[in-house]
Length: 553
Ligand SMILES: [Zn+2]
Image (tube, rainbow, N blue to C red; front, side, top):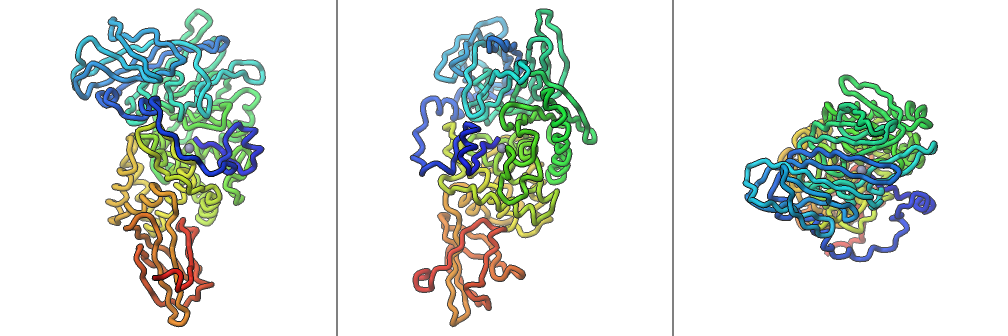
């Protein structure tokens, strides 16, 4: 997901979001709290087990804004132990936790629930527990976590979006990013006449005979907790197909006609991303687009949508260069996360650029696929106006810290730079396809990405990745000219001492590739200082041309 930060503060007020552009310099980040460490660290009672399966089976009472039920959790122990860590928001009550018929003791500590077993659980064995809970969930986090609203005709409209705050804001689970279940069942019981849309393939409905109907969904793939979703409302359904892939769309009655027009874009999006990366990752679950009361979220195989059924982002030109108004930002960006975020997932929130830089870069690839290379580049470079360079893109690990928004915009500009470093589009497309195919359905960290690109290119790109992801400053290409000798000296000014990156310089119509390092090199050039350009649309770098005496020792 992306939190919009338009330059005009009126939007920030309207949307109730923070406007990064209007903020003064950031104060130092606060030290992680006890809660952040419990939530963010992959502690010993998480690391001792491996999730296999959830069956989340809940009943939702719209009038009482109440949720209750059970999560059946199956896991394999990785070492002998008597305790595991799960998570549930403090506002919700633990009713009981059972191993078979045996009630288990547990201890709550802020958002964590430590579950104790009467006998040692053995490494290699599989166990199943039933975690019963209930209560009135609080609305919390950027998107509300779970919200109980009414649509314009007075029908209940209940949705979840809990990235950041965490899925345990509305259901009990092992609330972290590293470990995912291999598959999942979701059962949601709601008053008759309403519809629930969750993740995965629709299985069917069962009339429970008490005024409620249960909606059953089956997720056939690994799924990260924050992607698990329910959407309850007076939804109208329409369907389509792209080859074998079922496409299912859900909108409120008053928006149905608009949705039928706008959601057509899903097909072109799927074609573009399948072209670059291969088959849609969740074929058995299908692709769904569901109207929601917030801008949008990448819920796996059940993308939620609230972009006003209009092109651009909340009816604005998102990168400000006239290209964003050609397509629906939310359909393209949130669906890109099916490949990057849902299929490939970061193992710690610190490395969330693995979701967001890539999803943002996929917008750029979508533009290139639809309208060509030149427009793709223009759209990409439009993002420069949003970059702050105030904090590194990779946040501290293990402390539940979300990285800054540069992970989107600077991240995408960095990937565009990497393409220019590879400097061979056929090779670049093969690298992208190979990267996705290699890591699909896995939870990875930046080191895995870097290792892959180093191995496949045969280059040492580690200092390049590190400069863009682990430092705040852009690399600066320093150029000093000696007009008498007709030479230019050049070097990179960067935090990484081993930073070395080829770059195109000289005249726009015949660029010359030079290979600067952090040490000065000199070459002859017929191009005078004032006409000597750097291809900054292809490489996201700063350029400085200090005077000979000032710039060079
Ligand atoms: Zn996103």
